[in-house]
Length: 228
Image (cartoon, rainbow, N blue to C red; front, side, top):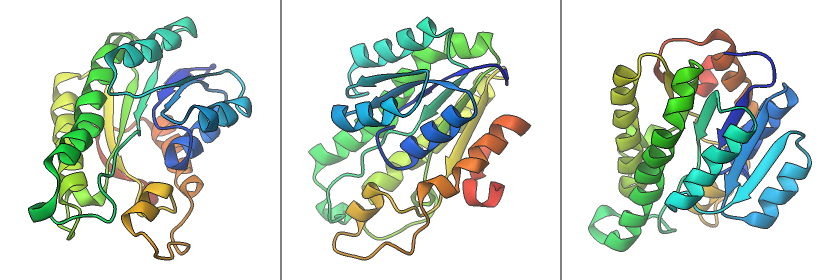
């Protein structure tokens, strides 16, 4: 990994793990291109982070994905792509027997198809810089939890996509990272009305991301709490 002001694209960066990752990378000299659907929250976050371009929008929009990559090129080209943006689906979480198919399509569009679309656009520059892709996954991709069939199957698709990409793109590191249960809005939406204050804050696992970038291990699956 280049050490002098490298550039990262981070999706879903207005809150939760995306925001914590942006803050951590910014504090270590990274220049950032940030995406989120919530424009006001994204602008507020970006104001605190020097060398940052904030572009609100939906990553399911191909034109928006192209704008993110073009903005990174203006900064010198991305060395890192963090595919963090994701959709949970209906809340409370429905069983698969009752999961609305339109909502399932939306989850797949955001979590899988848009992720691959952005990755495809970023890959030429990532190849040229021996860069890395960090796809945020979940234990719901590998463990069967009641109610998590929609979201979990989308993350299972992300994991297999990541495995194949790691084989096909030998010059780019591809990591798929399970952050563990964190105190985020998405996690709260998964458990409406429940107290999730016992979950750790997202910033507790971002040092593991710095360690990934510093040690540059082979492509593979990482559970961030175990990589600290």
